Amino acid sequence: MAEKILQVKNLKTYFHTEAGLVKAVNEVSFDVEKGKTLGIVGESGCGKCITSLSIMGLVEKPGNIEGGEILFEGEDLLKKTEVQMRAIRGKKIAMIFQEPMTSLNPVYTIGQQLVEALLLHENMTKSEAKERAIEMLKLVKIPLAERRFDEYPHQLSGGMRQRVGIAMAMTFNPELLLADEPTSALDVTTQAQIVRQMMELRDDFHTGIIIVTH
Image 1 (cartoon, one colour):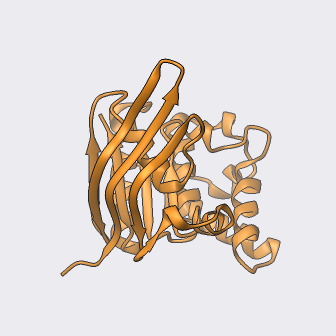
Image 2 (cartoon, one colour):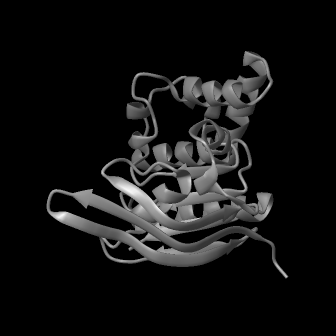
């Protein structure tokens, strides 16, 4: 029997607005198995993205998680402190955003951003971090990875930026990957390449994946 990496039980994420109570996520339950992919499909505004943000502990006010459980590796994330969640985010649970410019800082090179994350979470030198970062760029099939390392996000195409987003998300071989509309802004050919890339990484690292999509 496959191992359940994530169990979401009766999750309730509500927004207290001036217009009244909005039940963005209301008693949602699902499991994600290690090395498997779960799709969350629905129309705009149905709570797909809020479900992902709830798992990451990134719901902002006036939103609030009102009830339920989010069990990751058997531990309830809703009982973790912000400091504990910071240690989990990026390293054990990673997220690919709909628009990669959301997660990439426009004033830093691709390499600087990858190296910074590695130095924050791993005990390695800058040269080791650079080597690892270039290795990740090659893993997601970015051509001329050594050159791209020194380029800024605006110098890359949308598909290339999304590959960088995947590289950043997969840097620490996370147990769980959340992909929020990862291909919506891309052309059909690039969409297929990105999805194929994610499935290859899932199979190589046995990562559980949640794909949020229309």
